[in-house]
Amino acid sequence: MAMKVYGNGMSVCVARVLLCLHEKETEFELVPVDLFACHHKLPSFLSMNPFGQVPVLQDDDLTLFESRAITAYIAEKHKDKGTDLTRHADAKEAAIVKLWSEVESHHFNPAISAVIHQLIVVPLQGKTPDAAIVEENLEKLGKVLDVYEEKLGKTKYLAGDSYTLADLHHVPYTYYFMKTCHAGLVNDRPKVKAWWEDLCSRPAFLKVSPGLTVAPATN
Image 1 (cartoon, rainbow, N blue to C red):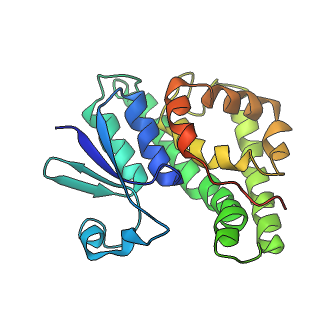
Image 2 (image 1 turned 180 degrees about the vertical axis):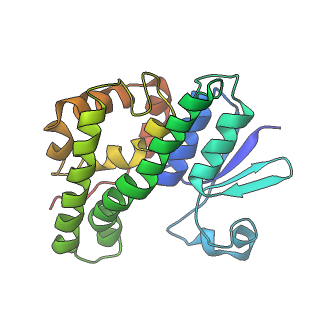
């Protein structure tokens, strides 16, 4: 039986999981969840994820939530299929993948998600983005990207010369970010720009990107 992913393709976290599934060439069913109608807050959904957030993965009798936990499970279960996203055959290489995945989670994601929240979610709520929050987090993001620029001058991808979860986890938020007027933060760093152009040209991403349809605010 194919895995089921509950969510909406416009969600960054859902897109992260869909990218992983496509990279692993794994069959799945996307079960739509209407976020605007708050279907993720219904009892039937809360029984799968008590925090009321997408995505949720069901694989037979296993139910998972939290997108990075889901991608780790998919990559491990299908480690001999599709793209090797964890470098599982070499303990040291696998450790580097985990390290840079942690960097994404603890350094990159907080900054970029705060920017995208202000430029996408806040306007959808009929409110005005907080320019101070945007500027504060653009500064934080710039410092992270400076580290990436140096790292990507040494290896093609963050965890070495192979595409892994450490890169994949960045993709959905960066895609939305590149639609904003702040894309220069990436484009002005040659190594980061080349890395991003590589990531967004992958066949798996081309299958997922049509679902990333929300337009950021222009300011």
